[in-house]
View (cartoon, rainbow, N blue to C red):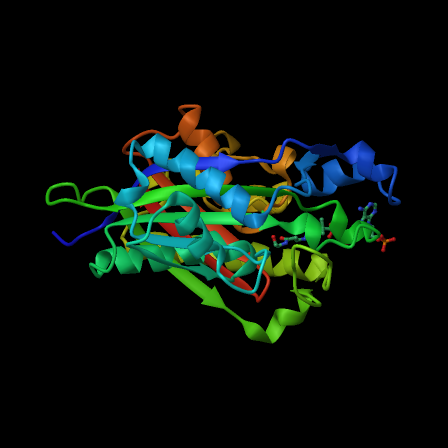
Length: 322
Ligand code: UT7
């Protein structure tokens, strides 16, 4: 049987500082009630000056390696999904390799906004299947607090900071029943103007802010995610009833509930972190996955469906047998 990518560890990092809806209500014209009922968000973690995209990615990576019981020397590929890198270059991925003391591998960042983790996972899976990597760290790390216009109530209440990571390893003969079964990626540049950053991001100063037509993004998310989950299941001949867990991108509880309903799944089978983390873009899926693996909900053998949509637009899904 052909080689597969097994998901053998996960980890996370969340900044210590928690900002509640009430705290935001003292800065902009909003309320805890509006934010909770429209989005499901109650609080978010926000990085302090010493916390960067790289530092959070490194902590999540170390946490994931410890969970996998692997040394950094087992890693020859790092891919970081991020749209808030600290610098234009070196990439976050190569700086993670440096911090881990790994010199034999290679790495790069993937820019696909909130779909960044799904994109990065798909690319890592392709490289492992092709024999171009044996052990990979796939990380989502984001500091959206540095691209938010804190005066804009329509965006500033929606996002948070954090990093999540998974460790992939090439299967050995006989192990190939598990692992990443399929990934599907999409993009539509014709609607790039409904969610974008009007500049870049950097460690020292703001030069761009996130801008979003939330209602339009919501409309695209509901329809595109519904077809994306069908596509990934159909591609491997599985149905809704086969899915053990939905680990969705965490943008809005109403979008998550819509996908769960489409999949005929109870919310008990959906991993939700949006209430505590808000939208951490490319970090949201690995953060949620790690939480549910560590608290014992997601177990070996479970079929996990992940999906995301973000700026670009980009969207996609992944199906993993744990
Ligand atoms: O991860 C990347 C993908 N991003 C997403 O998936 C986000 C998708 N979009 C959404 O989640 C929702 O569209 C939002 C949460 C952004 C907005 O919810 P909505 O139910 O679509 O609200 P709306 O944009 O239609 O706004 C309703 C009202 C407006 O007032 P008027 O025009 O009806 O008077 C807004 O000005 O709510 C107002 N509003 C607010 N009020 C209090 C917008 N933001 C706020 C706020 N507090 N923070």
